[in-house]
Image (spheres, rainbow, N blue to C red):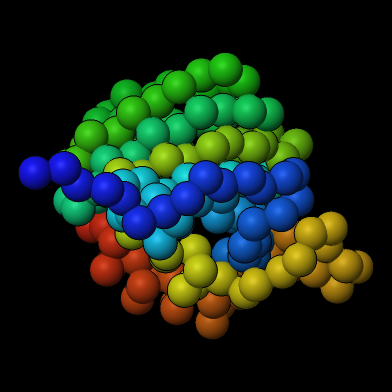
Amino acid sequence: MTMTANFTTMFITQGKGSTYLVLGDLYTLLAEGKDTGGTYGLIEQTMQPNSAIPPHIHDEFEEAHYILEGEIEYQLEGQTIVATPGTFLHFPRGQSHGFHNSTSKPAKLLAWVTPAGGEQFFAQAGQPVNLPLNEEERSLLGIVNPADFEKAVVLASQYSRCVTS
């Protein structure tokens, strides 16, 4: 039996795609499950200085990162890795991973999830924005609102398990 996917060729130019402000960082959904027949999701993430994603585990999907700009410090199963542009990291299901931009400059990465679904966390947890950001939206970069944090914590439990030390 031959299966055909229900998606078409995609073309997204820089600054396009659905972009969300989530806990002070920007996430642009370049490909969603609805676009890829559920195969994968692709997210461009811009982490502000001192932004961090706490250690967590995904049971339902695998994740990979490719660093485009800046420097990001990863915690992987008790090991610390400093990733710079051109670094590729793959996190299989069940592997603990967390990461942090400990520098004074923004960092940018591509995050790939397979199968698709994990990318929807950012759409659910974030506030939609258009690029380029307006002045009010730029003022929110790097700011974590306590109400947004609580919302993200509740939603995160649908996509990952928190890892405690």
